[in-house]
Image (tube, rainbow, N blue to C red; front, top):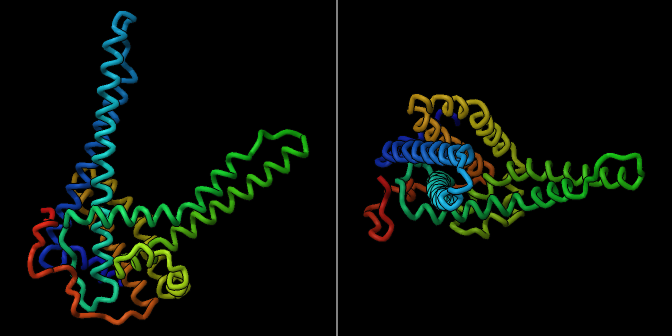
Length: 275
């Protein structure tokens, strides 16, 4: 399973190019974050005399506009990369001989949908965790506050469990969305439950988790020598392959040779590929 996942990212006609494009995207995002952080720290540390209050206001407004632009740029690239992950799931779930898809601009739409799916599964955790933090009171000997604190702590604990559950359910839900190209499929809880309560899915999820927690951080450390950006994207694509194979095995989906992993006969002129 792991060997297949590691061999998948550069496969097919477009896999290697997609790895290069994805690595460049990660590099550009890193530059955007560092640049915005530098500008923000420079603005916060700058001192203007009282007579230069107007100039300070103009600089602050310009910085605000720059930070908003950087944030929108970061969000767009992040969603585009998420959309590529959805394309990976779509070309692997239920496919006999999958190959990596090309990077397409329309992946942005899939990225937005997958982000909405993630948010939908995070709502219980956010509500319970926020409620737990909101109703807690400073510790006092009063019985009333002790009861409130207990209720708040319990709600926060439930929120933590909901967060863990979301982390376990979201990969399966996103894979079902990718397979059926329907957001509704991601919230068909009977099918999601059928998938996640299997040994095949649990094993694949654990393998993917190990890669996320151990291998990906190593790639992030290697970003100082640039190769880490490409390795990081490569590993994330491999992780999506692991999720897809886990869902395929869990649901007993029949491999379909008709889907060749996104190598379509002709380019869609309305949705050009990236790179």
